[in-house]
Each structure stands twice: as C-alpha cells, then as structure tokens.
Length: 273
Image (tube, rainbow, N blue to C red; front, side, top):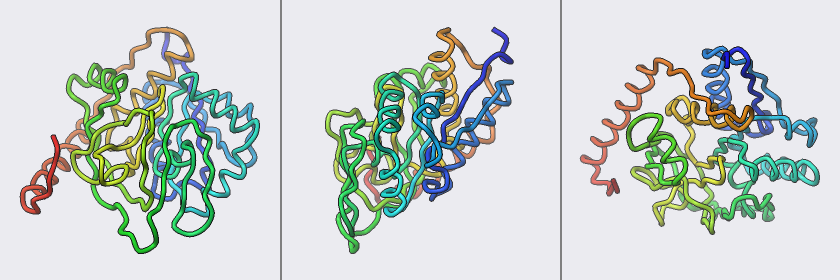
C-alpha cells in the first residue's frame, strides 16, 4: 500500500494538565517520524472538552506527568463514558505511552503525600503511594532492560539486539505491581519503587513508565514500534516501516550509556545487567 494512504490520529491526554516534564516531546516524536514517512497525522487533545467518541477515534494515546493537584482534576473528568472508552481502547490493543502520572491514573489508585487517595481507572493492576513529604524523591538517569515479553520480542526484531531504554526519572510516588507485567528491570536508577528492581508496566500494547527525558526522542525505535503497531491494528495488514537515519539519536544513547557506566565505576553503584 502507498504510504500516503496511511493516516494516524494521536490522542494527547490532557495536554494542559499533564505535560510537567517535557513529555510533549513524545507526541512530537511520533508526529514527526510519521510525517517523515509520508503519513498524515492528526493530534486530538483528550481533555475536558473531549468526548468518549473522541477517545474512540484515536490510533495512539500519549499521556504525560502531572502534579498531584492536576492528577485529581484529570480523574474528576475522566469518568463515566470517557473512562469506559479509554478502558476499551487499551483492552483492545490500542498502543500508547504513559509517563509518570499517567500510569498512576491507569492503576487502581494513587495516594499523595498530602490529601485524599485519587482513585484510578483500574486498567493496570498496580497501586502508587507517596511515602511522605520528607521522603527523598526518585530522581536521576534511568536505564532499563525491556523484559515485557511481547514488547521485548518486537523491539529486538526491529533493532537486532536486546532492547534497553534510556531516560530520566523524577517521582515521589512508589508503584507496586500486581498481576500487570513490568515493562522492564532496572539497570541504572530506581524504577517503580527503588526496591524490587522493576520499572514501568506493560499491558496489551500500552507502555507505562517513570522514564521522562522525554522517552521517545531518546529511544526512537519505541516510537516506531508504536507507529507500526497502530498502523497494523488500524489497517489489519503486516505493515513494515521504512527505516529512518537515526545516527545522532543512537550516538546520544551510546554517550549516555558510556557516561553512566563510568559513573557506576566511580560511585560504586550496584548495577544489574
């Protein structure tokens, strides 16, 4: 099929409330990498003015981080038919990337350091709790090995090697997974809770992570996986993306990995590889 016939609609979750740490870069990366291949892209803000039908119309969903107050506002709005539409999309395999505050909203609940528990959508079997205002935040560079079976297999097929993700975490909440599969295991950093070595979550085709940076510019092959997965689901065809030249992005990843290995050696940080 001619690539010009492909169209993608990106649903951006509450862009005015949930873009705390530059996660709009994930939206831009998906948009640009699609357009460079000749695809037509539409971005739909899934905010207070959006309807359940708007949610049902998108091919990829992107959600960013937020402060506790903003998360509460989002959850007040994301109820009823809109919540059911979100659940239906993710249950049926719509791909997405959800960072920091967004995975907490997709879980059962988030308990902030101050204030009432914020109930989530319960799509992901996880809970997040902030241990208290005097608790040290999880901040710093983050590297994970992707262990979610389907995603790890797909990414290794795309890039020809075991997939590692580079990012930056900044969160106070600690996440504990239930039956939901972890996105990966921590190689460098703290991850979900700084204790069990897990990072993020993966459900159907939805990626949940604490990795900012934002994530996709640092790991462009993940953006391609989201695009390819969305197109295959939409057109029901075995679509293969035309490769792009990612020399600069890959050199940046290599430089960061090299730097962190040096940091590990000098700071004697325990790293699992």
